[in-house]
Image (cartoon, rainbow, N blue to C red; front, side, top):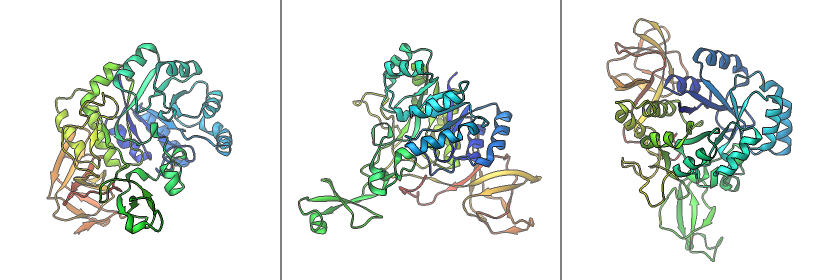
Length: 423
């Protein structure tokens, strides 16, 4: 059976991913993950992870997928003994030195080849299999036909591929833009997402003292006076940013091609994003008769224009069949999570965004598309009625709607906020 693999930037996101249909989750540890700015897992949460895995029986993978410098590889050697006690089923690795250290210390553990290794052909896959890798996460440049041929050539190797989320403009994510603009290396987990910044074209008269020989240059909105020459049309644009990947309409084709694991990108994105995307692909894998409705909800989360990436021929129309505009779209605001029911009909909340009395809010669950509620009551820590609730306080919500612990709360985003910084 195909595996649905969801991102887990922290423990709460992992719990949500499992609740909304993921078979497995992947997360990073501090220092060694390509999402260094994600919260990752705190070192003191090991016992909670062990309990969660035991309770759910689901799998957990650890990303140790940076390209290691010498001091970092020595640090990994020093920590490898402690890694043995963590409840990871496999490690995701791109650096062969890190692979050797982990496999020598834990020969019984699976190691998966990171997409950063840019593995795109059957000869490479078979080589990695002989080395001891049990799974290859193919580079995003692999097509469905490539996957089919690779699987036929190496039938015993597990194949994992990304099916949803952000894509990098650079080859298999090996990008130098962030290092150039921000002195933050994407290959060390510190990508500043420079390709997604807002740029505008500046005419020669505005920067000729700096770059007299050029006619146009790019200027980023947060870095006035810094010019990068280009010849293009006028106005701010995310000219360096790719579309987002969305393969919701092609899950069966990927499975037929031999994919073992369908992977969702987004360890730095919100818990709400994780819930909506995970449950949509769960419905697609399970061939749910309600899939079309859950598919529609993929267009309510923050996203760029969707495409099918490199999976099909370039001559094919790769735009997904729902019109979207350039830039990020976000039709709903993520309000928070429903916690335990403390009294009949009264629920504790993990609030992330303000809620005001009289607003219409939505609850969503793993098998509940949405439940609207405009008759709820907000309560303070003393269970007294209040007009609004905010992040960081003990507050409760009283409702007669059939909600459950773990449901997500959202509300319509009036004005359809669009921002390059929204996730």
